[in-house]
Each structure stands twice: as structure tokens, then as C-alpha cells.
Image (tube, rainbow over all chains, first blue to last red):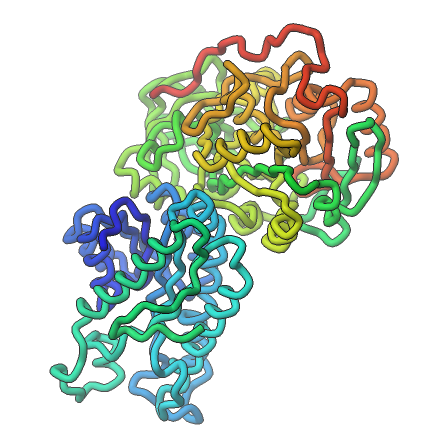
Length: 249
Length: 369
């Protein structure tokens, strides 16, 4: 399914799944803005992926949110799809929760919960306008199986992803009249810098390629957009069959 | 009236003065705005987000500190971000009343201005020492990033603390194209919109680049509002046609919505989807073809916003409402209380003023492009 002309914003877009999503969306004809903290990485990805709009900003910082939102909607002229992908692992190497520094926990929550909350809220007007205009609107929050399973050592990451997952569900319940689709997706264990930081000795051959996960994530977005523009459709139909796990909501 | 000095969009005590279709005046809480709407009505708001349009920097020729307030743009296209009409002030900031601000150094075509990360050239002088066309150097993305990081919302001395973008973006804010907030929309939140839908009241938006409200200079203020580009989505144009065929009313949230819709409908009364540039002034001689009611801020006589309200209502009733606003200490300016004005019932679709419509006299465009 193509995404021709669809306006997509992706946070954490310079590595791992985020970068794969930038490339997949561009390949399908979307207009893409991506966000990341490091200016030189943003410039490099923008240079290598023609047409992508690179935005420098830190999702975990309150003062960066509105400048990021303004550049997204300014450069794309609106927004149809927001992918909250940027994530923080918490302490590296992973620690038992009782050994986790408060600062590490806070940082994980700012990046994985409060940042996506702020950015989604700032962009809600643009997304609702897209939905009203029949373009469809999707907020996709990248989740994890750690959001539902209490894996030892994944306390900061897992608890913050659980909070993001629940935030997604509540938004979905509250906003049906605006016809914005809220999705929480687990892309599976991938061979990414974050996974290497968490489990340095993992065998890469047992891990998914981020490109494969990105393709499935974008399929899920495209399916929601297609359904959204059908008469009477308002999202919340969960029949997407992919390896990426869409949580029941 | 009393000036609202706190940047709170929806204070719990916000009030609404309603002038109903029988010219009766009611004082209510603004939260009960929805109670004055009916199933079948169509509420239309301006979904423009507000640019951080105040930029401090240096006039390179003299080395003098200046403040540039962006005030106009030729279109709403995302890539059309290099040219702006701008008002230039000398050193100082919003803490000084605009009337008391220092003038800029003498400006000339071709001169450079540095505004933080943004470099600009003066392209045109627009007949006043403070009014110019600027061209920003660099790609559209570079200009967007420069504005996002260096700009601050335009504000005035009645608010003591510096405003952030979250203070001036409405809940429904979308494309960042307004130079000052379309503040009538501060009254709306997602709860109100869901209440409206439950009651069969439709809601749609337009995008209109609301301009600056004051320059502190009488001669310049007489030019306000400057030309303002707008966009009317297909879905909004269709909803208006549907409502006009039925018994519902078109309720505009803010003067910018009135300006855009009436401009679009100026030829034959029909609102068309697409882009336009509102060039007209709306006043007592304007014939309203589209809008039946307006939710707006509280405006003082002689301002361009007040003049627009005169298109809805006779002067006597408006003056009575102004006296009530004063007597009851309503709050005014962008974070103030609101008024809801319904056009008189017998002339709901008609023309309450027999004077000729002179609002479309063509003015010279101020922005190159």
C-alpha cells in the first residue's frame, strides 16, 4: 500500500527502527519529517534520504516540544501520521529496578511517556484537521512486549512503555469523535543500537531486521488510513495481521 | 473594561456577553457558550497555530539592536516562507508599550538584518519608516528552524511575563501561519467540541493567517488588518452549503473566520474551497453573506475588530453592549472574556444595512510574490 502525499512525522529518526521507518515511508511516497537530538546525525540522514525534513530536537525536553511541532506542521503544511518512536532504555547496562537511579527512571519516563504526550497534544489540532478533511489521522506509539511482561532488568523501560501503552488506549477511548486512530505497536526484538545496548551478547541472527519491522509498522498505518477514509469508519477495528504485534485495545 | 493580564486561555471564571437575535443582552459563563447553539448549526474556527513572529537582532549597517515583528506572508504554502511583510522597532521589547517604542534606524533596500540564526535582506520599503518586506536567506527548512528556535510570540506590555508558544496555540492549532493568536478560539477545548457533536452541532475549520493587532503607530494601525492569506478546506465549504440549505446557522469563532468566509463568498455568496487572500475590511457597510453569528473577544470601539462587529448589528445595540461590558468589568484583550453576537432574526440571511458595500475597494498588496 502506498502513502502518496501522506504527511508523516517520526521521532528518533536517525537510527534503528526510526531510520528504517523514514526510508520505508519515503519509498511509499509519503512526505516525511523526522526528529532526533544530534544535529550532525539529522543532517546526514536528511542528506542521504532526499526529501526528508530533518528536525533537531529532544523529545524529553519541554522547551523543545513546540519548536518541534511547529517545524513538523510548518514544513509539511499539516500532519496525518505521528510516530512516537524515540525511546530511552533507562540505565545502561540494564539494572534491577532497586538499583536503578531515579535520574535514569525519570529520563526514561520523560522520553517514553511525557515527551510523546506533549508532542501528541501539541499536534492534536493538525491531526484532527486531517481526519475531518478525510485524509485520515494516525498516532502510532512504538511499544514493546516489555510494556506488558515484567522482564527483570527492564524496569525503567518496561514501566514507561506500559504507561505509554495505557495513554494510547485512553486517548483512543476519549477521541472517537475526532476520528484519530491511536495505535500501540510492538515491532519485536530487532537488531538495533538500542537492543545492542540492552543485550550486548545477543545473537544478531535471532533478531529481526529493523527494515522488516518498519514495513509491517507502515502496513498497519496504511491500513488505518485506508479504513479511516471509508464512509462511517472511525478506526478501532483490529484485524491487522502482521508479525508486529498490535496490542488488543 | 479591564485588561486581562494573565496568559490563561480558559480561566474558570471566563464570561460571555450574549447579544441574541432579538437584541437582548445576557451575561453568562463562557463555558455555557454551547447552550446558545442549536442542532444543525455549523461552528467554524480558525485552526492556524501562531508563529513565534517576534525576532530580536541587529541592523547590520548601523549595528543597532532591533525587533522585527513578522506581519504578513504572500501565501500559506509551506515552502513560501522566505518573504514576509514586517514591522521593525528599535531597541527594546514587549515590556515597553508599542506606542512608546523607539523607532528603528533608517532602513534602506538591500540592507542586511541578522536575527539570531536567520539572515535577511530588506527587499522593499512599504511607505512607512517601520514597514518593510524582508527576504530570509536559506532553504525553507532552515527558515522554519530559525523561527522555531529564535522567535518568540508577539506580545504587548499588558502581559508582564514572556509568552511561550503553548500560551498562544489554541487547542485546535494546526498549521503555524498566524502572526498573533486567533484568540477567540481560546474558548474551545476538546471537551467543548465533543459536547457540540453530541448535540448535533457541526464543527469545521479554516486556516487564516491572522495578522498583528497593533503597531503602536497611528498611521500604520490605520492599515490594519493587512492582507491575510487563508485556506478553506473542501469539507468546510461543503458543510457551509449543507447548513445554508437547512435551517442551521453559520457561527464564526473569531473575526478572521468572518473575514475569510466573506471574502470567499464576495462574488456570489458561495464559499469556495481553496486558497485566497482576504484584502477587504469589514465594517458597518459590509454585507454579510455567510456568517450568522460570531463568538469573539471583547473589543473596544474604534478598533478594526469592533468595526467588523458593526456588520452584524446596529450601532445602538453595540453601544449598549459596550456600556454593559464596562459596567460589569469584563476583561478585554486576547486573554479576556468573550461576546457572542447573533444577527437579528428577521434579517438572518439578509442585509440589515442599506448602505453600499465598499469593503472590497482594492488596496495595494503589501507583500511581494
